[in-house]
Amino acid sequence: MVDHVESMPEEDRHNSRRLRLQTLIRLRWLAVGGQALTVFIVAFWLKFPLPLIASILLIVALASVNFYLMIRYPPTHRIAPQAAFALLGFDLLQLCALLFITGGLANPFAALVCVPVIISFASQPIRYSMVLIVIAMICITILAVSPFPLPWFGGVEINVHTVMQFGVWCSIASTMAFAAFYAYRVSMEASQLADALAATELVLQREKHLSQLDGLAAAAAHELGTPLATISVVAKEMERELKDDDRFREDVQLLRSQSERCRDILRRLATLSAEGEAHLRRLPLSSMMEEIVAPHREFGIKLELIERSARKGEPVTDRNAGIMYGLGNLIENAVDYAREKVTVTVEYDQRKVRITVEDDGEGYSPDILTRIGEPYVTKRQREDRAGGLGLGLFIAKTLLERSGASLSFENRAPESAGARVRVEWPRMLVDAHSTK
Image (cartoon, rainbow, N blue to C red; front, side, top):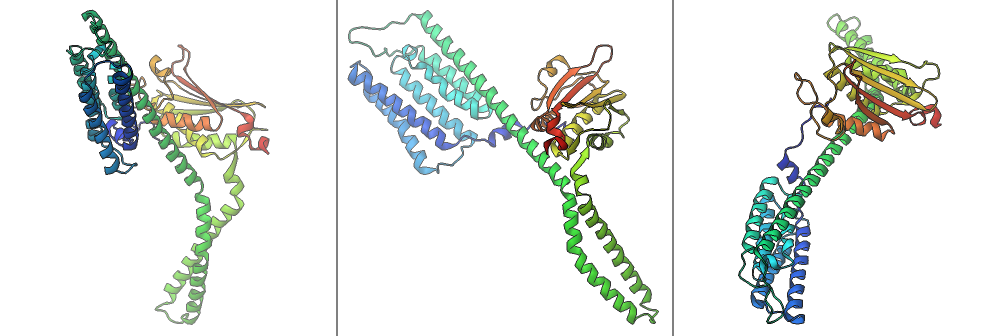
Protein backbone atom coordinates (compact mmCIF):
# COMPACT_ATOMS: atom_id res chain seq x y z
CA MET A 1 0.00 0.00 0.00
CA VAL A 2 1.89 3.07 1.18
CA ASP A 3 4.20 1.49 3.72
CA HIS A 4 7.29 2.70 1.85
CA VAL A 5 6.31 6.34 1.44
CA GLU A 6 9.28 8.59 2.07
CA SER A 7 9.18 11.77 4.08
CA MET A 8 8.71 15.12 2.43
CA PRO A 9 12.01 16.87 1.66
CA GLU A 10 12.95 19.15 4.52
CA GLU A 11 13.00 22.41 2.60
CA ASP A 12 9.67 21.69 0.92
CA ARG A 13 8.18 21.01 4.33
CA HIS A 14 9.43 24.32 5.67
CA ASN A 15 8.27 26.19 2.57
CA SER A 16 4.78 24.78 3.11
CA ARG A 17 4.64 26.46 6.55
CA ARG A 18 6.51 29.73 6.03
CA LEU A 19 6.60 32.24 8.84
CA ARG A 20 3.76 34.76 8.61
CA LEU A 21 5.05 38.33 8.39
CA GLN A 22 2.43 39.66 10.80
CA THR A 23 3.68 37.26 13.49
CA LEU A 24 7.23 38.53 13.10
CA ILE A 25 6.07 42.17 13.04
CA ARG A 26 4.23 41.73 16.32
CA LEU A 27 7.25 40.12 17.94
CA ARG A 28 9.44 42.99 16.74
CA TRP A 29 7.03 45.62 18.07
CA LEU A 30 7.26 43.81 21.40
CA ALA A 31 11.06 44.06 21.16
CA VAL A 32 10.86 47.77 20.29
CA GLY A 33 8.58 48.43 23.23
CA GLY A 34 10.73 46.42 25.62
CA GLN A 35 13.95 48.10 24.52
CA ALA A 36 12.44 51.60 24.68
CA LEU A 37 10.95 50.96 28.12
CA THR A 38 14.25 49.61 29.45
CA VAL A 39 16.25 52.59 28.12
CA PHE A 40 13.66 55.01 29.57
CA ILE A 41 13.80 53.40 33.03
CA VAL A 42 17.61 53.23 33.09
CA ALA A 43 18.14 56.79 31.81
CA PHE A 44 15.29 58.75 33.41
CA TRP A 45 14.16 56.81 36.46
CA LEU A 46 17.34 55.16 37.69
CA LYS A 47 19.40 57.99 36.12
CA PHE A 48 22.24 55.65 35.12
CA PRO A 49 24.68 57.08 32.58
CA LEU A 50 24.41 55.42 29.15
CA PRO A 51 24.86 56.43 25.48
CA LEU A 52 21.25 57.60 25.15
CA ILE A 53 21.38 58.98 21.59
CA ALA A 54 23.01 55.86 20.14
CA SER A 55 20.52 53.63 21.97
CA ILE A 56 17.56 55.63 20.70
CA LEU A 57 18.88 55.53 17.12
CA LEU A 58 19.21 51.73 17.25
CA ILE A 59 15.65 51.38 18.58
CA VAL A 60 14.33 53.79 15.94
CA ALA A 61 16.08 51.78 13.22
CA LEU A 62 14.29 48.60 14.32
CA ALA A 63 10.95 50.44 14.57
CA SER A 64 11.40 52.04 11.13
CA VAL A 65 12.08 48.75 9.39
CA ASN A 66 9.10 47.21 11.16
CA PHE A 67 6.81 50.09 10.21
CA TYR A 68 7.90 49.84 6.57
CA LEU A 69 7.14 46.11 6.50
CA MET A 70 3.74 46.71 8.09
CA ILE A 71 2.62 49.21 5.41
CA ARG A 72 4.40 47.51 2.49
CA TYR A 73 2.99 43.98 2.81
CA PRO A 74 -0.47 42.59 3.69
CA PRO A 75 -0.93 40.92 7.10
CA THR A 76 -1.27 37.46 5.50
CA HIS A 77 2.04 37.68 3.63
CA ARG A 78 4.31 34.66 4.11
CA ILE A 79 8.05 35.27 4.25
CA ALA A 80 10.42 33.34 2.02
CA PRO A 81 13.32 31.67 3.89
CA GLN A 82 15.86 34.14 2.50
CA ALA A 83 13.79 37.16 3.62
CA ALA A 84 13.15 35.64 7.04
CA PHE A 85 16.89 35.03 7.44
CA ALA A 86 17.62 38.67 6.57
CA LEU A 87 15.04 40.03 9.03
CA LEU A 88 16.09 37.76 11.88
CA GLY A 89 19.73 38.57 11.15
CA PHE A 90 18.94 42.28 11.32
CA ASP A 91 17.13 41.79 14.64
CA LEU A 92 20.12 39.88 16.00
CA LEU A 93 22.65 42.51 14.94
CA GLN A 94 20.49 45.40 16.24
CA LEU A 95 20.11 43.75 19.64
CA CYS A 96 23.82 42.92 19.84
CA ALA A 97 24.75 46.51 18.92
CA LEU A 98 22.49 47.80 21.72
CA LEU A 99 24.02 45.34 24.18
CA PHE A 100 27.55 46.22 23.01
CA ILE A 101 27.19 49.89 23.96
CA THR A 102 25.51 49.06 27.29
CA GLY A 103 27.97 46.68 28.91
CA GLY A 104 28.18 43.65 26.62
CA LEU A 105 27.80 40.33 28.40
CA ALA A 106 27.62 42.16 31.74
CA ASN A 107 24.20 43.44 30.65
CA PRO A 108 21.51 41.23 32.27
CA PHE A 109 19.52 41.24 28.99
CA ALA A 110 22.34 39.57 27.03
CA ALA A 111 20.45 36.24 27.04
CA LEU A 112 17.88 37.76 24.63
CA VAL A 113 20.41 37.11 21.85
CA CYS A 114 18.97 33.57 21.82
CA VAL A 115 15.49 34.71 20.70
CA PRO A 116 16.07 35.30 16.93
CA VAL A 117 18.03 32.05 16.73
CA ILE A 118 15.26 30.04 18.39
CA ILE A 119 12.63 31.58 16.09
CA SER A 120 14.74 30.65 13.08
CA PHE A 121 15.24 27.03 14.16
CA ALA A 122 11.53 26.67 14.85
CA SER A 123 10.36 27.96 11.48
CA GLN A 124 13.13 28.08 8.87
CA PRO A 125 15.24 25.58 6.88
CA ILE A 126 18.20 24.29 8.83
CA ARG A 127 20.85 25.72 6.50
CA TYR A 128 19.70 29.30 7.17
CA SER A 129 19.36 28.64 10.88
CA MET A 130 22.87 27.22 11.14
CA VAL A 131 24.31 30.38 9.54
CA LEU A 132 22.32 32.52 11.98
CA ILE A 133 23.55 30.64 15.05
CA VAL A 134 27.15 31.02 13.84
CA ILE A 135 26.59 34.79 13.53
CA ALA A 136 25.07 34.81 17.02
CA MET A 137 28.10 32.98 18.46
CA ILE A 138 30.42 35.54 16.86
CA CYS A 139 28.29 38.37 18.26
CA ILE A 140 28.34 37.12 21.85
CA THR A 141 32.11 36.65 21.54
CA ILE A 142 32.42 40.31 20.53
CA LEU A 143 30.09 41.30 23.39
CA ALA A 144 32.50 39.62 25.82
CA VAL A 145 35.17 42.21 24.95
CA SER A 146 32.92 45.28 24.89
CA PRO A 147 34.82 48.40 26.14
CA PHE A 148 31.61 50.12 27.22
CA PRO A 149 30.74 49.95 30.93
CA LEU A 150 27.46 48.63 32.25
CA PRO A 151 25.15 51.59 33.12
CA TRP A 152 25.24 51.82 36.91
CA PHE A 153 25.19 54.29 39.78
CA GLY A 154 27.45 57.28 39.25
CA GLY A 155 30.97 56.85 40.59
CA VAL A 156 30.61 53.05 40.85
CA GLU A 157 32.23 50.92 38.16
CA ILE A 158 31.18 47.28 37.61
CA ASN A 159 34.20 45.15 36.79
CA VAL A 160 33.37 41.61 35.70
CA HIS A 161 36.19 39.12 36.08
CA THR A 162 37.39 37.37 32.93
CA VAL A 163 36.40 33.99 34.30
CA MET A 164 32.88 35.30 34.97
CA GLN A 165 32.74 36.72 31.43
CA PHE A 166 33.69 33.31 30.07
CA GLY A 167 31.08 31.65 32.26
CA VAL A 168 28.37 33.99 30.98
CA TRP A 169 29.50 33.33 27.40
CA CYS A 170 29.27 29.57 27.96
CA SER A 171 25.87 29.95 29.59
CA ILE A 172 24.40 31.94 26.69
CA ALA A 173 26.03 29.74 24.05
CA SER A 174 24.79 26.49 25.64
CA THR A 175 21.31 27.90 26.22
CA MET A 176 21.15 29.04 22.60
CA ALA A 177 22.31 25.68 21.23
CA PHE A 178 20.02 23.62 23.46
CA ALA A 179 16.93 25.77 22.91
CA ALA A 180 17.58 25.93 19.15
CA PHE A 181 17.95 22.14 18.88
CA TYR A 182 14.83 21.59 20.98
CA ALA A 183 12.78 24.05 18.90
CA TYR A 184 14.03 22.42 15.70
CA ARG A 185 13.12 18.89 16.83
CA VAL A 186 9.67 19.91 18.06
CA SER A 187 9.01 21.80 14.85
CA MET A 188 10.13 18.90 12.64
CA GLU A 189 8.06 16.36 14.57
CA ALA A 190 4.98 18.58 14.39
CA SER A 191 5.51 19.05 10.66
CA GLN A 192 5.97 15.33 10.06
CA LEU A 193 2.89 14.55 12.09
CA ALA A 194 0.82 17.08 10.15
CA ASP A 195 2.01 15.61 6.83
CA ALA A 196 1.30 12.08 7.97
CA LEU A 197 -2.18 12.95 9.23
CA ALA A 198 -2.94 14.65 5.93
CA ALA A 199 -1.89 11.46 4.13
CA THR A 200 -4.12 9.47 6.50
CA GLU A 201 -7.11 11.59 5.58
CA LEU A 202 -6.39 11.13 1.87
CA VAL A 203 -6.18 7.36 2.22
CA LEU A 204 -9.40 7.18 4.22
CA GLN A 205 -11.14 9.41 1.69
CA ARG A 206 -10.01 7.12 -1.14
CA GLU A 207 -11.25 4.00 0.68
CA LYS A 208 -14.63 5.61 1.32
CA HIS A 209 -14.83 6.60 -2.32
CA LEU A 210 -14.24 3.01 -3.41
CA SER A 211 -16.90 1.74 -1.02
CA GLN A 212 -19.45 4.08 -2.64
CA LEU A 213 -18.98 2.79 -6.18
CA ASP A 214 -22.11 0.63 -5.87
CA GLY A 215 -24.15 3.81 -5.55
CA LEU A 216 -22.51 5.24 -8.65
CA ALA A 217 -23.32 2.04 -10.53
CA ALA A 218 -26.99 2.35 -9.57
CA ALA A 219 -27.02 5.98 -10.71
CA ALA A 220 -25.45 5.02 -14.04
CA ALA A 221 -28.02 2.25 -14.52
CA HIS A 222 -30.85 4.69 -13.84
CA GLU A 223 -29.53 7.42 -16.14
CA LEU A 224 -28.70 5.07 -19.04
CA GLY A 225 -31.91 3.07 -18.82
CA THR A 226 -34.09 5.61 -20.68
CA PRO A 227 -31.83 6.19 -23.73
CA LEU A 228 -31.22 2.45 -24.09
CA ALA A 229 -34.97 1.82 -24.00
CA THR A 230 -35.41 4.38 -26.77
CA ILE A 231 -32.69 2.71 -28.85
CA SER A 232 -34.34 -0.67 -28.33
CA VAL A 233 -37.76 0.63 -29.46
CA VAL A 234 -36.26 2.26 -32.56
CA ALA A 235 -34.33 -0.94 -33.34
CA LYS A 236 -37.59 -2.98 -33.19
CA GLU A 237 -39.30 -0.57 -35.57
CA MET A 238 -36.35 -0.72 -37.98
CA GLU A 239 -36.33 -4.53 -37.82
CA ARG A 240 -40.04 -4.63 -38.61
CA GLU A 241 -39.65 -2.28 -41.58
CA LEU A 242 -36.48 -3.89 -42.98
CA LYS A 243 -37.23 -7.56 -42.35
CA ASP A 244 -37.34 -8.24 -46.10
CA ASP A 245 -34.21 -6.22 -46.87
CA ASP A 246 -31.18 -8.51 -46.76
CA ARG A 247 -28.76 -5.58 -46.81
CA PHE A 248 -29.71 -4.25 -43.36
CA ARG A 249 -31.56 -7.10 -41.61
CA GLU A 250 -28.50 -8.59 -39.88
CA ASP A 251 -27.18 -5.18 -38.83
CA VAL A 252 -30.49 -4.19 -37.29
CA GLN A 253 -30.79 -7.51 -35.46
CA LEU A 254 -27.27 -7.03 -34.08
CA LEU A 255 -28.13 -3.49 -32.94
CA ARG A 256 -31.26 -4.73 -31.15
CA SER A 257 -29.52 -7.68 -29.47
CA GLN A 258 -26.68 -5.50 -28.20
CA SER A 259 -29.07 -2.88 -26.81
CA GLU A 260 -30.95 -5.65 -24.99
CA ARG A 261 -27.65 -6.92 -23.62
CA CYS A 262 -26.80 -3.46 -22.29
CA ARG A 263 -30.20 -3.23 -20.63
CA ASP A 264 -29.67 -6.61 -18.94
CA ILE A 265 -26.28 -5.50 -17.58
CA LEU A 266 -27.72 -2.27 -16.20
CA ARG A 267 -30.67 -4.17 -14.73
CA ARG A 268 -28.28 -6.44 -12.82
CA LEU A 269 -26.33 -3.43 -11.55
CA ALA A 270 -29.50 -1.78 -10.30
CA THR A 271 -30.64 -5.04 -8.66
CA LEU A 272 -27.27 -5.50 -6.97
CA SER A 273 -27.41 -2.00 -5.51
CA ALA A 274 -31.04 -2.21 -4.39
CA GLU A 275 -31.11 -5.76 -3.02
CA GLY A 276 -27.50 -6.11 -1.94
CA GLU A 277 -27.09 -2.79 -0.17
CA ALA A 278 -27.32 -4.34 3.28
CA HIS A 279 -24.84 -7.03 2.27
CA LEU A 280 -22.42 -4.40 1.02
CA ARG A 281 -22.70 -2.30 4.15
CA ARG A 282 -22.59 -5.08 6.74
CA LEU A 283 -20.82 -8.40 6.74
CA PRO A 284 -19.79 -11.06 9.27
CA LEU A 285 -16.36 -10.75 10.82
CA SER A 286 -15.17 -13.94 9.06
CA SER A 287 -16.24 -12.58 5.66
CA MET A 288 -14.55 -9.26 6.31
CA MET A 289 -11.29 -10.97 7.28
CA GLU A 290 -11.35 -13.20 4.19
CA GLU A 291 -11.93 -10.14 2.03
CA ILE A 292 -8.98 -8.35 3.68
CA VAL A 293 -6.63 -11.35 3.48
CA ALA A 294 -7.44 -12.45 -0.08
CA PRO A 295 -5.39 -9.81 -2.00
CA HIS A 296 -2.19 -10.84 -0.13
CA ARG A 297 -2.24 -14.58 -0.88
CA GLU A 298 -0.43 -14.39 -4.23
CA PHE A 299 3.05 -13.29 -3.13
CA GLY A 300 4.80 -16.59 -2.48
CA ILE A 301 4.16 -16.45 1.28
CA LYS A 302 1.80 -18.90 2.96
CA LEU A 303 -1.00 -16.86 4.52
CA GLU A 304 -3.08 -18.76 7.09
CA LEU A 305 -6.31 -17.41 8.56
CA ILE A 306 -7.21 -19.07 11.89
CA GLU A 307 -10.62 -18.60 13.52
CA ARG A 308 -10.43 -19.61 17.17
CA SER A 309 -14.05 -18.78 17.93
CA ALA A 310 -17.12 -20.43 16.46
CA ARG A 311 -18.85 -18.63 13.63
CA LYS A 312 -22.19 -19.02 15.32
CA GLY A 313 -22.90 -15.71 16.98
CA GLU A 314 -19.91 -13.99 15.39
CA PRO A 315 -19.90 -10.18 15.23
CA VAL A 316 -21.49 -8.56 12.20
CA THR A 317 -19.50 -5.45 11.34
CA ASP A 318 -20.26 -2.35 9.35
CA ARG A 319 -18.03 -2.03 6.31
CA ASN A 320 -15.50 0.43 7.77
CA ALA A 321 -12.94 1.65 5.22
CA GLY A 322 -10.51 2.64 7.98
CA ILE A 323 -10.56 -0.80 9.64
CA MET A 324 -10.23 -2.67 6.36
CA TYR A 325 -7.38 -0.52 5.13
CA GLY A 326 -5.57 -0.60 8.50
CA LEU A 327 -5.75 -4.40 8.87
CA GLY A 328 -4.80 -4.86 5.21
CA ASN A 329 -1.74 -2.71 5.71
CA LEU A 330 -0.63 -4.72 8.76
CA ILE A 331 -1.03 -7.97 6.81
CA GLU A 332 0.84 -6.55 3.81
CA ASN A 333 3.68 -5.47 6.08
CA ALA A 334 3.86 -8.98 7.59
CA VAL A 335 3.93 -10.56 4.12
CA ASP A 336 6.72 -8.21 3.05
CA TYR A 337 8.99 -9.31 5.89
CA ALA A 338 7.99 -12.95 6.36
CA ARG A 339 10.26 -15.78 5.28
CA GLU A 340 7.64 -18.41 4.60
CA LYS A 341 4.45 -17.88 6.55
CA VAL A 342 2.08 -15.26 7.96
CA THR A 343 -0.64 -16.21 10.44
CA VAL A 344 -3.74 -14.12 11.04
CA THR A 345 -5.70 -15.22 14.11
CA VAL A 346 -9.25 -14.04 14.81
CA GLU A 347 -10.94 -14.54 18.17
CA TYR A 348 -13.78 -12.94 20.06
CA ASP A 349 -16.00 -13.30 23.09
CA GLN A 350 -18.86 -11.32 24.56
CA ARG A 351 -16.58 -8.38 25.46
CA LYS A 352 -13.62 -8.30 23.06
CA VAL A 353 -12.69 -8.83 19.43
CA ARG A 354 -9.00 -9.56 18.88
CA ILE A 355 -7.03 -9.98 15.63
CA THR A 356 -3.38 -11.05 15.76
CA VAL A 357 -0.99 -10.84 12.79
CA GLU A 358 2.26 -12.83 13.07
CA ASP A 359 5.11 -13.41 10.63
CA ASP A 360 8.23 -15.59 10.75
CA GLY A 361 10.69 -12.88 9.71
CA GLU A 362 13.47 -11.24 11.71
CA GLY A 363 11.10 -9.22 13.90
CA TYR A 364 11.52 -5.67 15.11
CA SER A 365 14.88 -4.30 16.21
CA PRO A 366 14.88 -2.93 19.78
CA ASP A 367 15.20 0.71 18.75
CA ILE A 368 12.33 0.43 16.26
CA LEU A 369 10.09 -1.40 18.74
CA THR A 370 10.00 1.65 21.01
CA ARG A 371 9.12 4.01 18.14
CA ILE A 372 6.54 2.01 16.19
CA GLY A 373 3.62 4.16 15.13
CA GLU A 374 5.61 7.35 14.70
CA PRO A 375 5.56 8.75 11.16
CA TYR A 376 8.58 8.05 8.93
CA VAL A 377 10.10 5.28 11.03
CA THR A 378 11.44 3.29 8.09
CA LYS A 379 13.86 0.64 9.33
CA ARG A 380 13.27 -3.04 9.97
CA GLN A 381 15.65 -5.97 9.97
CA ARG A 382 15.64 -7.35 6.47
CA GLU A 383 18.50 -6.79 4.08
CA ASP A 384 16.64 -7.51 0.85
CA ARG A 385 13.93 -4.95 1.55
CA ALA A 386 14.18 -1.18 1.26
CA GLY A 387 12.11 1.03 3.52
CA GLY A 388 9.18 -0.37 5.50
CA LEU A 389 7.51 0.61 8.77
CA GLY A 390 7.15 4.16 7.56
CA LEU A 391 4.13 6.26 6.78
CA GLY A 392 1.98 3.23 5.91
CA LEU A 393 2.17 1.76 9.40
CA PHE A 394 1.49 5.15 10.96
CA ILE A 395 -1.63 5.49 8.78
CA ALA A 396 -2.79 1.97 9.65
CA LYS A 397 -2.30 2.57 13.37
CA THR A 398 -4.07 5.93 13.22
CA LEU A 399 -7.09 4.55 11.32
CA LEU A 400 -7.46 1.53 13.63
CA GLU A 401 -7.16 3.65 16.77
CA ARG A 402 -9.83 5.99 15.40
CA SER A 403 -12.17 2.98 15.23
CA GLY A 404 -11.58 2.36 18.95
CA ALA A 405 -8.90 -0.33 18.66
CA SER A 406 -5.84 -0.69 20.84
CA LEU A 407 -2.66 -1.98 19.18
CA SER A 408 0.41 -3.68 20.59
CA PHE A 409 3.62 -4.52 18.72
CA GLU A 410 6.12 -7.11 19.92
CA ASN A 411 8.51 -9.82 18.81
CA ARG A 412 7.56 -13.46 19.14
CA ALA A 413 9.40 -15.81 21.49
CA PRO A 414 13.06 -16.56 20.60
CA GLU A 415 12.22 -20.13 19.58
CA SER A 416 9.80 -18.79 16.95
CA ALA A 417 11.30 -15.63 15.48
CA GLY A 418 9.16 -12.97 13.92
CA ALA A 419 6.92 -10.03 14.72
CA ARG A 420 3.46 -9.97 16.28
CA VAL A 421 0.80 -7.27 16.11
CA ARG A 422 -2.35 -7.47 18.23
CA VAL A 423 -5.41 -5.37 17.43
CA GLU A 424 -8.23 -5.42 19.97
CA TRP A 425 -11.63 -3.72 20.14
CA PRO A 426 -14.42 -3.73 22.70
CA ARG A 427 -17.02 -5.87 20.92
CA MET A 428 -19.69 -3.20 21.18
CA LEU A 429 -17.63 -0.92 18.89
CA VAL A 430 -17.45 -3.35 15.95
CA ASP A 431 -20.57 -5.51 16.33
CA ALA A 432 -23.45 -3.86 14.49
CA HIS A 433 -25.96 -5.98 16.43
CA SER A 434 -24.76 -4.64 19.77
CA THR A 435 -25.13 -1.01 18.67
CA LYS A 436 -28.78 -1.18 17.77
